[in-house]
Length: 454
Ligand code: SF4
Image 1 (cartoon, rainbow, N blue to C red):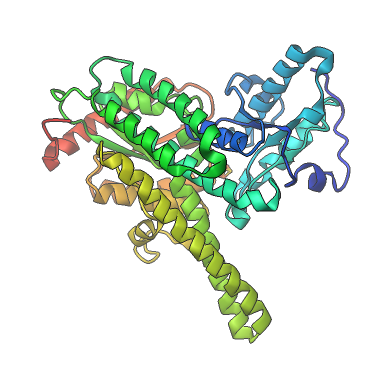
Image 2: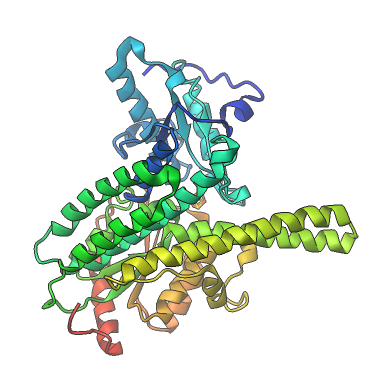
């Protein structure tokens, strides 16, 4: 790689990390959740954007080379993914490599977390390579509840967002099918093989029908997948202790970064449910509504009618969107639960209720900690036998979550494990997981909820 001195110019952050029409350019997506990211890319392709999910974790050495070590681990991993991908593209295309072809997609969030800075930081790194300087970075942001406006022409952006939402929920549900079936499969590997074939079929179908939002066609395929997957369960195998995973969204959903923790838990005898992507999207929308309500209240108190009218109009639009999301999410889960008893998702209202009016935590503090704490307490209520908090080493919200959850779960005698990751291998991780599963089994036995059949 050729490395130049950083030559950042004022305003470049605004023009080269921006929302603009990406139609016709290759959109590069870093992989986060194995199914969901692929379905999102398929959704973009359905709307004429040649999106591609980059190979992941192969470029971690690049990610480490161009960070100081103080950045959050997901920033290192995604930076490695883009640098590795572009390096491979240069090798493949030789002199035909051109920055004009690509747009790099890296979402961001507002609030106190460093996630809002990943794409700016990575801009600085890409600018150090003359051949990458002209690759713009685009994003969706939690600030406006992931509005797609700007990425696609206005008349299509709204429909794309709807397809993206349904695709994300389908990704969640397919994950849940795997977690429900794989621990009890007749032959090792059969669930993964089948779900990979199904995921490819789903990608093709999203590409084919996504543009006209034929969700019924997607549901039909999903129902078939659930019906077939159910037959993989060996009824002689006893039900395992159920383990709920919470934590930082990237780490808990990206198997390479979390050293495949779900599979490890299954190897040691547990059945896992990881918090979903839908939960995060719904939380972002819910938070957006709360902000708008606050704005309405302030404008009302000030007697500023114009500001009140504006905020109220936005609030109504957002509330309609939230209701639509709840309806669609329930619909997708219903389709699958007709065939297979996957775990339902937590509603954001129920998660907030579990925070007990701010006694455990408060949505006003924001961040994923609110979801993780409330989500863990919801798992508890549902009779889960253990909780794992998966997060990047030094992650601020997850550290808060750990501080709050540990004493509560200790008092309730429910096994709890912190699982921080930074890409290194901890020699005692396996022993910790085995011990945790042993405790979860005891919890299951004590509760008498170890049903005989899966
Ligand atoms: S949630 Fe954790 S890992 Fe993500 S940006 Fe915030 S501190 Fe970093």
